[in-house]
Length: 590
Image (cartoon, rainbow, N blue to C red; front, side, top):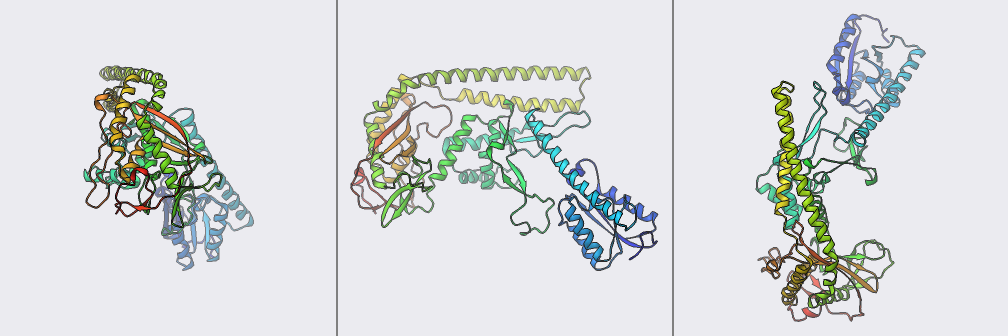
């Protein structure tokens, strides 16, 4: 092998910097320049330069490193010149593998910062420095993690520069020492509000929201068309309601690390969601809240119901689909056919409660709802208990309105102070522009909230609610007995929140809408579409789906399940089997 100090030796230069080191100002070009100067001083010939820019030292599979090892096997050079041990690898095991592989190919591995020798002491020094490099990597990772947690838990500041749709992160100003901060993008924030309104008021699914956004030409965050995953990411993002979470996911190695991508810049290139108990919540200021908390919660409930009520692959018509729950373990009760008959059973198969024929449970629920419509006094007794809630809600709305007005007044005061500071030369034009942009975002958010409060439907007193419920039941009762199967199921989903099956009884929880009497109408029943579906069949929700704070009278009833005889099966207009109940015996089936 060629001696280290031999003039004219052909060698390759290998350099590497990670992404974190790039942020600290270290560049790979400066590293290469130092190595080239060192080679000239030794009168060595540089046969090639291999640069892994932005690659972690914990990753062994790096494109330029592999290229250099391949060229070493071809004998294109005699030695490899590296700045320091940690540039080759920050893992002792990887360091040993790479170094031995190069030496097996007849290469000398030269580190600029170490003596040029091949003694056992030299090899020991390389191993010790490799251990220190690995230790330093772990220490940097730990310090970074602790620093981020401190910023969130103690300093209560938003972390990160990749913000969600609707926001923009203003990076740190190193010249003035001002911390980075989050601001709202008014145009994108308006899109977010519109998306939540569509789901909350119109009950749109994520797919229909996606189609509407693309039809209107509204660009996504990266300027392309919207995808369903992007829409769901917006709808599930709690940041819009004022709470951002850190540590929701952690880096991990992919299950199939080489599937389609031979090289990955980091070992932990995949993400895995952390348990919710490990999330760190950060409450955002009121000026950064795009939607109200109660609206965000209603949208989450609507998305879950959309999943439960999805008609895909439905071969049998289950009237209570998505409404029924196991009273023993809390799992859903789902439909299951068996030998030509149809049952409801626990999805988790806890076996603590029996299965039940669908027509038996359908009949019990149907008769309970029919009894409520005939005798609204069964649930009106609970209206009196809601009077305190009405008073509290009115007071909360007044307080919120006062807070918004105080926020607008404070913004105006801060703007006057900034202008005064600019006139006296305390602030530069750039600093003034940045501060005014922040105040503008806060003012837009506060004014939007003021409009939302002003447009909320007026609350009604319990006495008016009682009168409204009685009129609503009278209107619905006339159409109830003529509902077709799809219409009946949609109506039940409108007024019933949950049905808990307890074996011998069911607990039915729901509500009847209570609105001012002049606003109470009958159930709207539009004709079916030309394909035999119910795309245009709508049932007026009377406040069930819309946003705002529409008054409701809740009911919570427990009914004993009778032992009903089995009935024959029929088909609906779409060819699905369903179990007819008493009032449907006169409905012709296809």
